[in-house]
Image 1: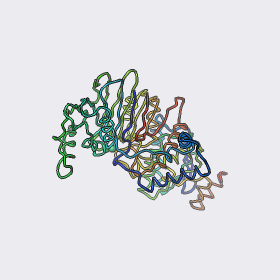
Image 2: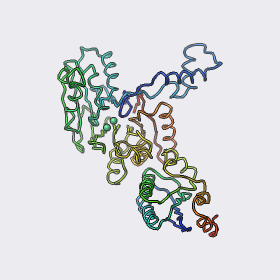
Image 3: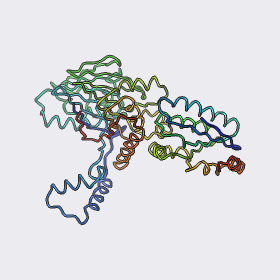
Length: 125
Length: 319
Ligand SMILES: [Zn+2]
Ligand SMILES: [Zn+2]
């Protein structure tokens, strides 16, 4: 999954469908980032704009990441859910698990000025 | 085959209280305001077409008990939750005390909400009746005896006049119950539970309650996909929402609505029926969860369409 650094924030942007055929890889990669970010005092914005849908195994991976993050100071927020994914988040009650933002630009505003500036400088803001 | 749901609630029977009844009446009157009805049929028609299921009826509150009717065969009953009481009453009306029957009972596990109906099942008191209680637990008889011991209950197990036989089943070994073939699977739950697949006349019904599908291991998940394979109906423990199931209610022994959809999709099941409802949820909440689950199925559907429903006390599904 694509990972971009913006000061203390890392934006992860997985793509495709997360179901029982792809969830294992998704989970392994996600948790690797969680471990790395926790060690480096960084935070994660999970930009899910590239995810078409996610079944229960994928949601489970997100929950494990959330639980891991709570053992440290790491914050994970979710951004840019496609309409189907937004519905899946509501149906599964995952909108109570993660703070979600309409866009990644919105999400990054919750972090430092340096992160916002770095994001803008990359032409993303 | 026909499947009749006598009890669909999980963990503890519940009852709609006066406030709940009042709310339904209020909503019905609100909808009927200004209308006039020429006869009773018009009222029925109004209720069926203009009131939602949770307004004109509801899910009921008896705990797990499902009857499986295959041709004119002896009774097949899954679990003896509090729903068994009403089934017993109907049987008494139908046969009276003088006509002995055979009851083949398949037990998911001996948790209280799955055994509490037995002392209130009139046929169990009548000599000549046969109760064949099947299950995978060695502790089944102990649990049935214990719930009827002092100081918890006045009538002891030995006082039940019917001929009661306990039959131990082993997962992986098909069991013949008349012309119905029964397959058994051990399920993840506190102290284990057992799921059953009933096959008759090229149709298959799976009763799989009180199972926590953690999705930790694909081997384990695939085993259930195989057990559910191409079933006409899967009755599934969909007690919690997904987030609850894997956070605050982790290790409580139950699954979520959407895990059931995913497993049934993979198994190519025709009809997925949510079961073992959370006692905290009222009729409106359960109706909303059904709407959401139908929508989830639509979103993740990959070709094969899965019918999604939610069991309620009194529901009969013909397969
Ligand atoms: Zn139960
Ligand atoms: Zn149980």
